[in-house]
Length: 122
Image (cartoon, rainbow, N blue to C red; front, side):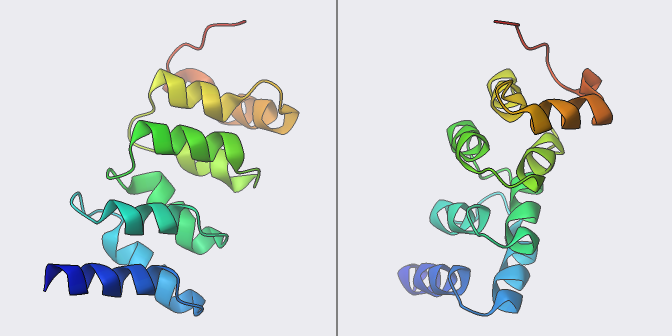
């Protein structure tokens, strides 16, 4: 039964209907025991309305996954969503800030970096 439920959630996470993926993301963003495969799929969704709630709130995403998303996704809303998490590890803050990306530097200065851990300058 558990495998069937997991398969159903995995299918919903890749459903072609945006409303279905949005509803799923909204429903599981606060669920600490949500299936990692489903949460990761939603976090990688191209639709901001699907991925953002997961990136901001889902505790099920591990640090390495968050860092990988920060480094590989180039949408302007990604760093903001990650920066709005309840806690931001220094490694994630460094990945979000990414000094090589001027728009991200501007975002940090506009929003204030005081909420983030100190990031050593290279």
